[in-house]
Length: 122
Ligand SMILES: [Zn+2]
Image 1 (cartoon, helix red, strand yellow):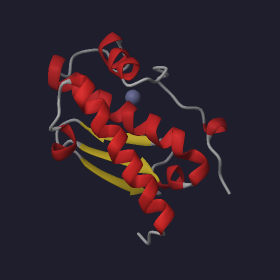
Image 2 (image 1 turned 45 degrees about the vertical axis):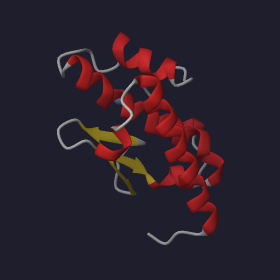
Image 3 (image 1 turned 90 degrees about the horizontal axis):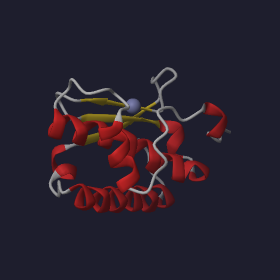
Image 4 (image 1 turned 120 degrees about the vertical axis):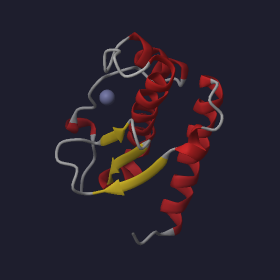
């Protein structure tokens, strides 16, 4: 992935935000354990996570500067799945109270799906 300086700055902001959420969630080593990658072949999904490998995939469209807030929300959404599964196991409801609680702690409205209408595309 080629990366312009502005993208690098946004990614750094993203990692800083994620580190801040990790501290609030009481899992300070989360970002060391999680692997994040961007992909274009995501189908309809803006983000996905694998609870076994702790890999998070984010849609490349989220790297558009206009989508920075959605980038943070989507990463937080996936990380909240990981934290909820670490704390409560994998039998909880996917977007249940545990997941929603972590989203709120990070300052996000816990919406299970981000509509594509909210995404800026060129
Ligand atoms: Zn989800």
